[in-house]
Image (cartoon, rainbow, N blue to C red; front, side):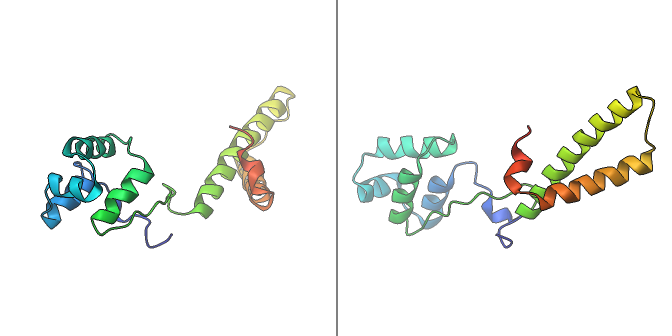
Length: 140
């Protein structure tokens, strides 16, 4: 996934990939509709559905094939990598748990200093990352 992360080429054109590619290769809507065996109006509905995010993968693949293309379906973590995604979730969970512990200890008159809280948070985050990954996602 590394080569795909941050790639500007992945941004869908405002007009949608279908219309964009048709225009780039000089294919008219009626020509693509004919190749697909559907009406021009049906193709227009598919193009509109793509722009609106409602197109099905099946339709997109079928159209792509007639455009001499293929569909690549991929989920790319916003933060750059799956490792970073896990690290961030462990950090969020550790922060929440340490905050709860600190609050409880303060109520008992045993407050912790910032350095101690930071050390506790770092240790808990490391421990969480070593644990079964699915447990990181049990708490919202």
